[in-house]
Amino acid sequence: MIKAIVDNLRGLWSLLVGLHITGRFGLGPFPVWLGLKEPESGYPQLTTHYPWKTVDDADLVTFRGPLELVPSEEDPRRSKCVSCLMCVRACPSSCLTVVKGGQGKAPAVWLNDFTLCSLCGTCVEVCPAGALRFSHDLYWVAEKREDLVNDLLARLAGAAPEKARL
Amino acid sequence: MSNLFVNPFHFSTISENPADMLGDFYSLNFEKGRVDPDSMILNLGPQHPSTHGVLRILAELHGEYVLRAEPVLGYLHRMHDFMGQVKTPYQFLPNTGRVDYLHPVAWNWAYCGALERLAGLEVPERAEYLRIICCELNRIASHVMWWGAFVMDLGGFTPILYAFEEREKINDLLQIVTGSRLTMNSMRFGGMGADLDDRFLQKAADFIPYMRERLKMYDRLVTGNVIFRRRLEGVGPLDEEICRRYGATGPVLRGAGVAYDVRRAEPYGLYDRFDFEIPVAESPDCLGRYLVRLREIEESLKIVEQALARIPAGPYKHPKAPKVSWKPPAGEAYFAVEGGRGKIGIHVVSDGGKSNYRLKLRAPGFSNLSLFAEAARGTLLADALAILGSLDLVIPEVDR
Image (tube, rainbow over the protein chains, first blue to last red):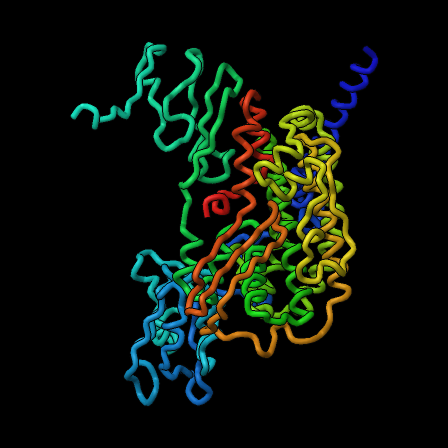
């Protein structure tokens, strides 16, 4: 009998402890909203509220975004690509299209189908000229499927928009 | 002619409503419909929030009690085994991160380890440390995610919101090394794909004490909660015998009181140099499995702490590591690692050709799920869902 009462009281206490924790987390932002505390000292904001804020570039150094071509040293509008097609053969998802026939060894067409790409990085590793890298483009959006086929030569030449902005 | 035509709609005489007696042709034991005239067959899933994916559970209910249950698989089958036999070994690497989305680093390691054992490749010491750090951080993320989802199955919604805070921090850490936040694919044959930097070391050093504080909060919020304890204590006891029969591993087996962990039983990498314990539950019920996972987070934190303190300088990839067009030598090898859910084993057979001759992925979730049919028999439906949650299923891994 006494044991049952003690057990129930303990159970009730455990519920109060839980309410205390959730209450503290839930009411955490209120002092900041009421202007009693500095915004930085309030509830820690771990995520980024996207349209109003964007992720720091320092946090994206190693992030693998959509592929892009590395500009050559002489002309930043031209790529280092030598059209060897090793990336096309190595790609597990067959998402690359490279057509030879540009000026010198340069490619005429360089397409990356982002709907197929799994960002594995095989093409970046296999490239003998070091002509490929991952961009840090987090905010790329498209409305049509065809828009996701990324023309990397056009992007390099600056014709493609760098970043979709609000 | 009439013998050739078999009526697929098997009607029994005990039912008044023949439509109610329709069996399920995709199941093993529910093909003939109900066994009890007073019972009802309930389909849990394939789209049910507490099955965590496209898993379907067929349950025959008598009131609130489960007479028998059967998991029906195959809704997320993607032929990963076969893809490994079509693509070259290097091209299969991104697939390994997609088999189990909660602990992809362990699958990466299992596949790289199998091919390294097959070809006799060496891995530099720094890469081994990097692998351990990534794998253990990912294990923490996996267990934390399970903690939130499991409590959500039992009706408490708030913990999963807290669990995502830790997961966010770990994702930020793993992004520095692996470059992605979900389907990580950072290991290469003979090393790692990238190195860590000072920011990682600093963030990880901040994370470990933070996580220990949060674990105390978990204990106060959930483990001590009277409703939670009474839902789990004595529910779904799984003893050693049933685990052995179905091949269950990981926290399910350790919850049954067997201190079996691949990191100890068949040490791989440099795990034999680390000081950590294999937590074992006192009781074989759902609460035991819950406590095992929470203690495993502490042990993983210990491993990460030791690894960060001792990580040597050096290359993160062997200078003679194979190139993308690498063909493994003929032979076969098996490599097992301890994943968040149990023993991940990969058996690879090569005939020296471009792609593997045979690849077999052994997923722990599949074996753990197999014992559900037997464990759920005779329990209340709500308890059966608690058992299902305590197995920590990841459906892409179960189906592969």
